[in-house]
Amino acid sequence: MADDLIATLQRMTDGLFAGALGVRFLEAGPERVVAELDVRDELCTTPGILHGGAIMAFADTLGGHATGINLPQGAGTTTVESKTNFFAPARTGTTIRGECIALHRGKRTMVWQTRVTSPEGRLIAIITQTQIVLEPQRTEEQQLAALFAGKPIEEQHALLARLERSGAALYRAFAEQEGDASARAELLAAAEREEENARLLEGPA
Image (cartoon, rainbow, N blue to C red):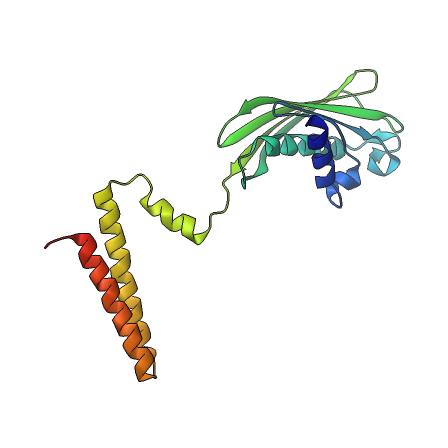
């Protein structure tokens, strides 16, 4: 299971910035993600020294994927805050390691801290980032259903009745623009059905 998750995370970097950066995932779970990165010349800010932005991007990748592991189906995430403290340089030819652990895993936000270390275990940087949880995009049917969720049955009837009357008004507006007499009659009949449904929901006057 863990190997499958690592393989999935790795595939998600294909063709994207994290893949170009060279992030390789080693461990992955709901509370901890570990990866490594080779320090290459093209990632350096001065000869032999890894660019600080590369370190931050490395950590951001881990935090983003760690959040993704914890998201409900269909939800998304993005970084809303990140703070980095640098302690030592990462040198060309070495492989740095990032260990990302959960500080907070909530329904709306998650906070992760990534420790980036050298092959000798020397602390290079600590990055703390906050990820916001983006709710799944709902279908039109789900959005309509949400209008009724949690309401007493009487309020649901009243709301649906208003929607039925709105539908009747739309049918009549369509009928006014319809040149074909038969189609116009069908639209007006549909409007009356909507009105009848509204009256049924509203109950006796």
